[in-house]
Length: 486
Image 1: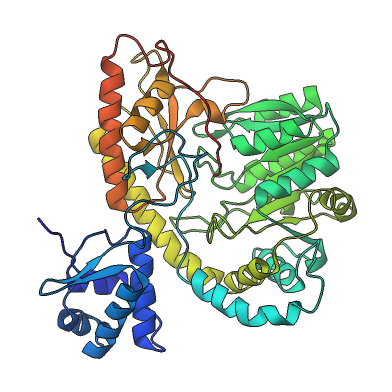
Image 2: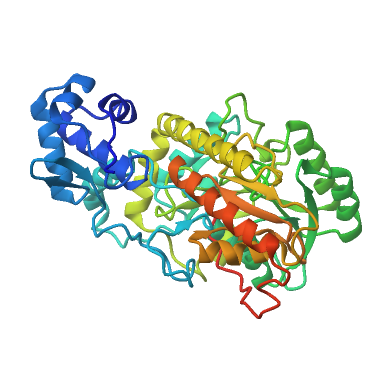
């Protein structure tokens, strides 16, 4: 049976499209919906007459928008049947082979990477930035601390959160992971202790290890930080740095309160430990209400890392460091040994997006909230024995598997799920010193229908591994850790 989408539903999804001109804005809105999966593939779009009535536009507007979809490869017109959604190049998505190395399925659902598709407005920002780019082409194009327009936009975003910031405190880099690499190069000597959360962001752990740090793991409970234990560990080990994610921690989704931030800041100050705070998920509050103050408001020596990847689009490789007084020169010495600056065009794009951040994030939060709730509902229905806490924000659920069910834990589940066309990350890759194989991270960054399909496949995979008397690991299956990007 051929599926279709009703005109009122499509009109609600595309509501707010740019109407200058309306046909182009409508085509752009439909391309975004099809590209990110909110409108499925091979669906029959409403008739031009029905959609024009639902949107309150002329039929000519819809006709021209549909023609634009067909021309760009996002739709196919079938004689006597209607207009059907498609993707340029077919169903197969462009997947990095280092992230999806073994599956050959065309319908793979990649939940290994907690990253969403581009926000509406990213394409427009690129187009506008192209008009500004020529003014930079007469120079050498190197901006080791960043294009001034972006430094000012980032500083203004901190000002708006109650943290006064001078643009000269900002260093622009290609993402928050690059920011951490620069910080580690500048502030960590070989053998220095660095406090890290476990579970925590594995790529950050690896960046610190490669910088020569001795990582000291702080156990992270599903309900948050045990700050009394952190205080004792800090006093005993006197770490040089403490790398923490207080805003919707990856992978648990925990959010550190103001009181907890003050307690941790006090403990780190007493031991002379520099806080390095990753705020990549900070804009992703999904349930409303005020957010805690920036960690740097409690600890002025905090080095703060930010990124456009989680809040706008992963393909926009732009991040930044907010430096406390006296640190920028040390970071600059380390930076020029790695690269001489981030791409100018992407910096101009990021500056535009930050200027419109609240409007863009409002729509994105609503979308992520719907996807989070759809994933949670599907997990409760299909896998009621799995335990998770619904986070107030972030991009994923941290799920605990029932104990005593399978010998291979999450590792066996992940291997079986991959064969069934869904990729998820076992808890063990988030651990500093091993363990956590009773957990899996399941992002809610795909469309709701895809998430429901993914959960159905996870249910089947879980049933298969639960019934086995021997695990894939016992039969010699690979348990290689994939590259983690989110």
